[in-house]
Image 1 (spheres, rainbow, N blue to C red):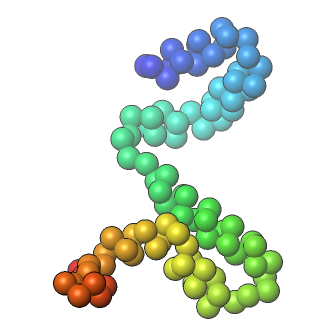
Image 2 (image 1 turned 120 degrees about the vertical axis):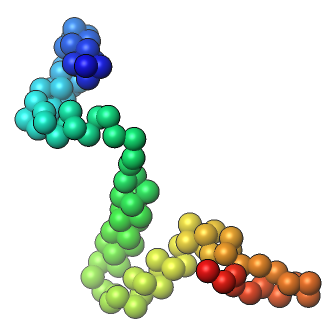
Length: 99
């Protein structure tokens, strides 16, 4: 119901770009209506895929999978996750945590 109210307010706003967007939603109205009440999101997955695609495109097809894999593993976001999975012992040496 809130979706319909939002669409009505967009149409009343007179903003052409938003009205065109709302009109485009009508093409797949069933999927939009079914997706609105869901609380989950695949944003993290989409962000990772976009990152991998950017790395791949920056190589311009000149590098194979080994370089793509290495660049993905050395990405700062991956390094931050990996550092959270490591632990230092009393001598200051770092070792991976189990699990």
